[in-house]
Every structure is written in C-alpha cells, then in structure tokens.
Length: 116
Length: 117
Image (cartoon, rainbow over all chains, first blue to last red; front, side, top):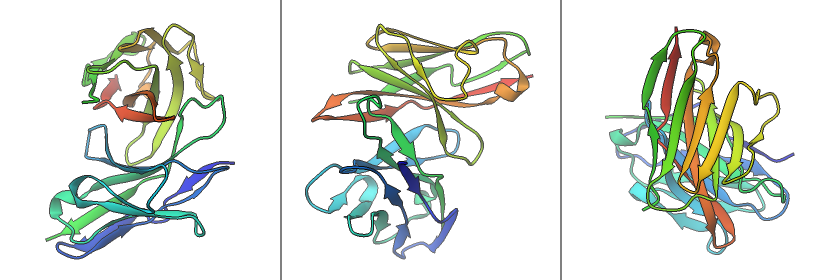
C-alpha cells in the first residue's frame, strides 16, 4: 500500500535556527513528492516538489527538501527559521496507477512552531 | 498563475438544508478536480475525484448521494452537501490539476468552512 508518514506531530525551533520536518514514503515505482504548507483556516500552499533529477529541491520561502531514495525520505529543511514559518506542513506523494489520475496521498501533517 | 478559488469561504446553515460550494480554476483549464475534507488539526481526507464531463469517483466510505459533485466545465466544479447535519461541519478544500510534464500537479483552493447548526 502506498503511504506517507510524518513522524512528528509538532516541531519546535527557535527563530534563526535551522529546521527539519521529516517525511518518509512508501510507493511503488518512482515517487512524485510534494510539500505543502497550510496557515489557519486557509487552503494548502505549494512549497516544492520532486519529480526527477537533482535530489536537493529548492522551493518557495527559502525551503528545500532532499530526496533520499535509499531511506525513502523527503525531509523539508530551511537554514534559518522565521516566526512567520509557523504553520501546518504536509508531505504528499502522488499515487501511482492508471486509475488514480494524480491522486495525492497526504501525511498526517506536522505543526511547526518557531519561537522568537 | 494556477489560482483556484472557492465560494463561499464560510457558510452557516440549519440542519436539513443543502449547501453548494463552488470551486473554480481562474487561469487554467482543470482536467481534474479533487474534493477534500479536513477536520481540525488533521490531514486532508480525499472525498472524490472529478473529471470534466464525467461522473465523480468517490472514495470508499463517502456517500455519493450525500455529497453531490458536478464538474460541468473545465473551470468549475461544485460540491453540494445535501440534507446537511452537524456532523457534516468541516473544512472543505478543493484542488484542481492539469496534466503537466506527465504528472498532475494540484493547486488548492482556500477552503470553505461549513458549520451546520
């Protein structure tokens, strides 16, 4: 079965420090991986994606993620956290299979709390 | 580009009434639209996938007669919650996609908060 796991419900980090939000996946074939951010009472905003190519993907707002095939991981990172980065983060993988028409499988979400 | 809107952004209704939520792709033609439901501080639960001009495909456990989805054009999909009850209160999010480079990238609407009294 295809799945995405975000092992941490919440990540706390001090402003200015580096942050990592973890994501591991299980999918048949080559994965298409995504990170989204959600602010309270808002929809999801796209941060970045990995389809193919360089394992280090750079995205919006200074975020980046590293695809690690051997560890089946796609952790989200930022060198220096901002208080405004505090939000709910979702990792997602595109489901494979002809009947899935691009359906995304989401992790359970990780709340990032950046303290001043 | 790739902007998706939802209307209304919030709605309060009485139990037993029906509520329609619109999802529009503003600057692209969406071959596929998705409807999700999200409970507080939880992940998104996919309810159904709809392709323009065809019937929606519902996920297991989602009542198709309860949640009516219409995807009449390449820029508009609607979700109608029929005979709404308090347990239908939730945050409903749509997304839209088109085939891009061999994969379907989804763009999300801002969500609709439904409260059923």
